[in-house]
Length: 97
Image 1 (cartoon, rainbow, N blue to C red):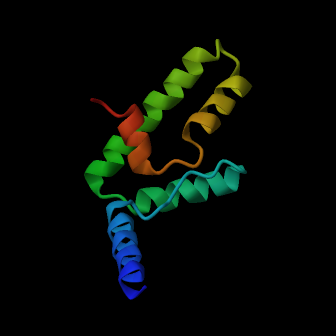
Image 2 (image 1 turned 135 degrees about the vertical axis):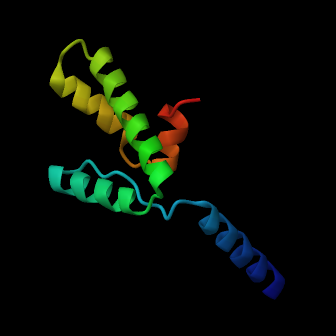
């Protein structure tokens, strides 16, 4: 029993250490989006900030292009594509390869 508990704790610590502190973008309101983006950016080093900003711009441009000029549709696409994701997930999905 103790070994199983210990194994679960070790795996949990390793997984938490591999993450980027779980900070995600929250689009539930303008204020929460601003605060979550600021918190996320504050947790990144300078290189990650640059990569994140480039990936975010790429995702926003893609949403704008797909929405045919409809700003409301573009914002919905951005929310659905980026909402709840961490900076590293956004960089991985939209960053330069």
